[in-house]
Length: 205
Image: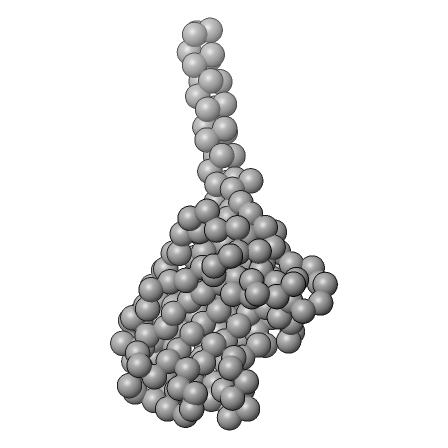
């Protein structure tokens, strides 16, 4: 009986340790979870280049319903890349209209293992590219020498989960945690509509 109780206790301890380690391994730093989520780390405000902002070539709604899980919010993006300069970058920044020219608080994502997000197209076939940490050329910009960059992603009509590994990129200071890029070469139908949701960094404690 003593042996059985001891084995049961050891089993519970091992299970507890495993559960704690799994929770630590799956810690998330959210860029976007829902439109009003209090722990979002990013403002959907910056558009590049300035010509795209001036011509109104992109519109986005961070409170579109429903989200990828059938609940909550997603971000709806409508982009017209038929107009010059034929490409658009929608930059999520830690501060509105901030590019790292002046001191401001950034995110320490030095323990991040991957960038995760969900996306889908309105018709299917829309292509986007995702980047992060793009402002390394500024004095108070991102710490990464080169940005995180995905391949061009072809979206389906249904939600799909995407992961971008960090692979040793220095993310000790991040001011641009998520960037969407759309261009004319990869999107012949204009304008295009797509959705993104549940954007987070998976970090190790």
